Image (cartoon, rainbow, N blue to C red; front, side, top):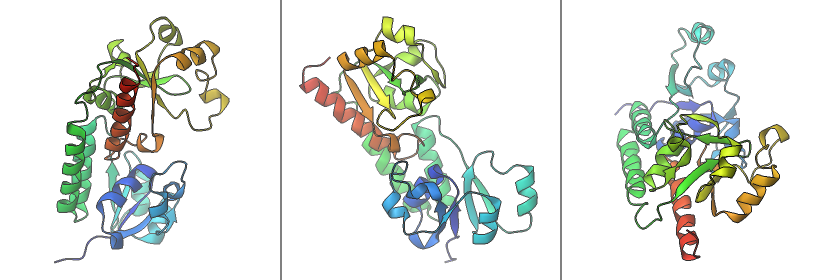
Length: 260
């Protein structure tokens, strides 16, 4: 059998995928963000590998066979600099739903010679996600970030909420993809439950306008809410199943406490 390709990842989302599907000896380097415990759920594991800043110079220095990058990273200037260097640039797509996450994991694993392992990992994650909605309350939910950001149709957040049997108010209100949800609408038509993302992290004032609003603070204090583990939420990869399990557990706890 031929040797497995040497692979490096240049951003946190690619790091998570690479660490999940690659053989340890394949990993040449991970992005610097992989070691930041505030951002990365794999910081301890990532400490075993050299880091990079995600630039062309890093690729030329490390010389992997395959580099996992953001989609759109390999523009004309980068292609020119890397021409003839025998480094395959593999853009990792940003998922729009859970099936995207599964497909990407399988495809990347296959490309780096780990198709069987990646397929098994995706199958196990899919099985974990499948029955999470059983017994959960049917609630009107609103995903909210401190700055007012929410997620409508065409996002993995909407997909996960729907898989948990929740009605996503952003989608039902006609919102698509990512964007702010009107504060007035939240106050006039509050959800049954808030799904809060990134509220536990320090935020600049410009990114926490909703979280600091007195009327919303009062509403949040009186409305059932669950918190998404932010480090399992931002990339939309296989780790989404861990976020979904955490949301489901909190919803069950709310029901046992007598909340709607």
